[in-house]
Length: 621
Image (cartoon, rainbow, N blue to C red; front, side, top):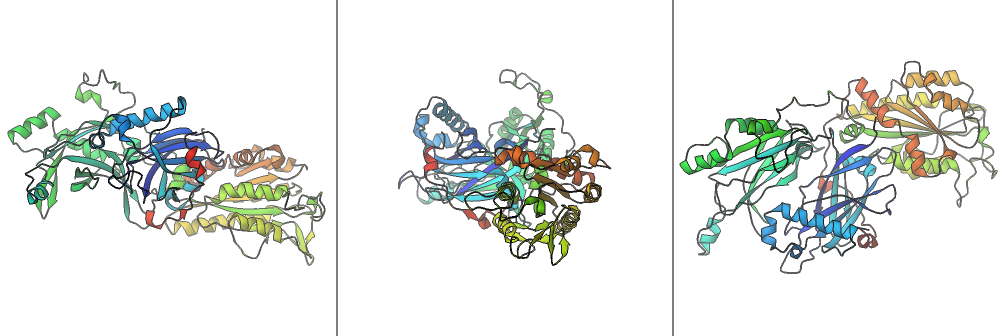
């Protein structure tokens, strides 16, 4: 089973700096590049958005798809915002604004020439922003905001591409008797009558955590000049982009009168679904029949725009059908196919009767928490001895410290409140052995730095290290904590899953009791990951990670040796490799499905500071 996930990226910006002078306004578009594990590696183009003309607060309709995200591995992407240079097209800006396909082709050509032929990129950069995908997915609503170097801020939202749906919607709509939004202004100034030039935009619905609804723009049509009964061009839309493959997910169609300034005037709007659009098409005829009906003034079925209970024009569905991936729709044979054979029938909505993905749970509001348990047994050696595994030097942190920092930095981003219990085991205090004691002054420390400070705070007079190691109490405590967290989140309509990170030299002797504790803990929303520190005997750890250690076939344990990995990303990749499947297995078997994708309130996002200015110069490599 592939552990790579496919994601969707939506972008918007606010307060961009105008780079086009006093008499004009910039026309921003965005390019998304993949940097991978290293933010300074060579960029790979993932995709680019449409151009939003004459707008410094753009919301781009194009969704960019990302492949290759894997839990436990840093995955950096960088977004660059550019001011589109219309001169490269050989057309004026007003005409380009009405035909988005031209600008898309121009941007594609310019990007290819820049990256392959190293020609100068003709569009001015307005700023760039670097994001780590896991950090965005772990944020409330799977969204993040960052300031740009030249002014303004960029907002990114990442959503699971649930089904990798290759189906498309072929759509064509027309308007009938739309109101004229241009006549009054022109007549007021004695300029004569002029008809509106309508176009429409498609939006998909996103639920807000407050219960409100946000609408993300995913498509903009061509502009039909001076026509109150327009027939817009037929278009083919990815269902993955439009509704994430859910044919009953609400979408919105907004019809506007075009303005060169970018301040378009709304004519009307309505909400529908893909299913309803296809059903409406069945009741209407072809585009030829639509044009004939317009000429004959006959009544055409459609969705009316109502204003004060009066009809304010209507929208008619001329074509709406689902194109299955196997349908041969090349440019040469598209017109030859019979309309009834071009489209597949609408299947029943897939929903989550299929096994959800790990990212489905993340974007559905599942909180992934971290608890930490640290081995303080005598097998580590005297912490004041330079040969001890616990010896700490500010110039050269020990393996415990480095492992805590590496794993903590990966997992902490998925926990929105950044509060983590840190426990120790294997000491005696006033003659009493303690195998699950609190590290630090608080029951839950704040952030990764809090984990590191809690770890170091244990080394103080009066500490007496003991032997052997005993995991059973921390495993039981982690299971109880995991169940408590799940219950608390379920009251909010969410889910919670906990990861127990144990760092140890491996000197345990109660293997049977540990096995029983793990079996009991497997009923909780919990995974146990163990990092072996030093070069001791880890055969017991390897047994606990093996198939023979599970009685009921539920494996929640993963073990790795710290010294087997040269880089932090290789360590976390191996250590956390099984977590996504374990999380999905647990919730799916208990019939706990992901919640609705949680959205975000852009106005309340914490805005990160801008990246260094030098990143804009090397954005495309």
